[in-house]
Image (cartoon, rainbow, N blue to C red):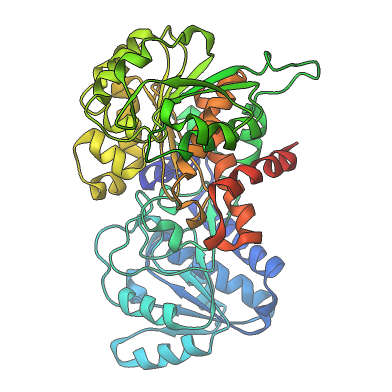
Amino acid sequence: MYIGGKKDLNALDQYTMESLGLPGTVLMENAGTAVVTTLLQHYEDVEGKILVLAGSGNNGGDGFVIARKLSDHGLNVELCLLVSESKIQGDAFVHLNVYRKRQLPFFQLTEQNVNELQQKINHATIIVDAMLGTGFHGTLREPYRKVIQMVNQSTAFVLSVDIPSGLQADNGYVDEIAIKADQTVTFVMPKKGFFLQKGPNYIGNWNLVNISVPTSLVKSLKLSLPKLISNADVFAQLPKRPSDGHKGTFGHGLVIGGSKSYVGAPIFSAKAAFRTGLGLITLAIPECNYALTAVQAPEALFIGLDDQNGHISSNAIKEINLTKYKAIAFGPGIGRFDEAEAIVQVLFKQLNGQPLIIDADGLYFLRNQMQLVRDYEGPVIITPHPGEMATLLDVTVKEVESDRLEIAKRFAEKYNAFVLLKGHRSIVATPEGITWMNPYGHDALGKGGSGDVLTGVILSLLCQGANPEQALVCSTYLHARSAELQAKDFSHYGVTPNAIIEGIPKILNKLF
């Protein structure tokens, strides 16, 4: 499933109308009908008072259709037009004209009757938000700002048509206020803004409906759009396990990390790797951590590395035979210390083209050595959170968060790297410019050690034969879905890295 922004949706709509010959009035009728069907199928309170709030554009036109069709079902519905009728044009005007000729319940907002609208909103059971749509950008103007404030303060169930009013379709930006929808019924494809910046806080539950704009046009028009990760994508991309497989079949991975202050990180990576099917894992850790780590991860093999002041020494890396491992993860728990940049240089020299995952403080020491990534003969996978990405780019976290999709994409293309930009909605980007959005996950993941779990899952899938893109798509999904599942038992507060690890097999069982 693709996700798109304002220009993308406009291009698809225009092609459908102009080249396929399907009029805009028909698309509007289809959109309104789909919203009404959703309401009738899923909500029990349709017998109450339904208020349809409509603006001047095509979103308002959808609202005119919705109000008319709800009336046709005998429901108690009223259309509230928030602008002068003289501002309604094009396809929207056609549907407003039909509505008015039907002499159905109609309220025109003016400066004098704002209090009356307030009363209507207060007494509504369901409010349909058809005010602004995907064309909105910039600053909210009146009367929309005031009306949105009223709606958000009401107790009504709020359904937004295509996108909550005030939310920007391209980037999820909200100028102080937007409709906080309980449900968003969206057309053609989900909008990028659903998953960026503040978008997830405003869309509520969302569902996609068909209005006869074919998404196959994305390829015909050569649009470069992100894809939304789904169960089906993960099922298709997970490496399958032959019934006669053995530990050698499922790969041998290496984690280089740990320090005196961060003993647990490599352990989380190892346990997560085993829970997702890895055959063998070796932990290359400081000698000072061996006793503690071996007790907690008896499944793993170990290389004890010479250490200085609780950190791995750069000379110790030279002693590891890296050719034994199908994929390598560097960074979990490694900490920050003077020699670490030298360790990165030694590591790249020792590798022989196998996939390399760089995470945690490994990314900090990569910031001045990105040429190593660009020049490496094999795939490099980086998994930064926004702060780490900001360090790599020498920008602020705010700048990263304001343009997450494009930043991940440009970084991957520039440095020939595979990027998993973590966050409330994580993004996967490939060197070829392919991007994926993970629609799952929540605050239960906000614990130290969660990222180390994710690194272990990625390492495991790479060792089992997934390519880097597949490994990242599947890993971010399994990681996020496990946290969601475990939160049902442990609450959002109580999910630990170990709980995420234990939840992953449950998600795998649901997929197969």
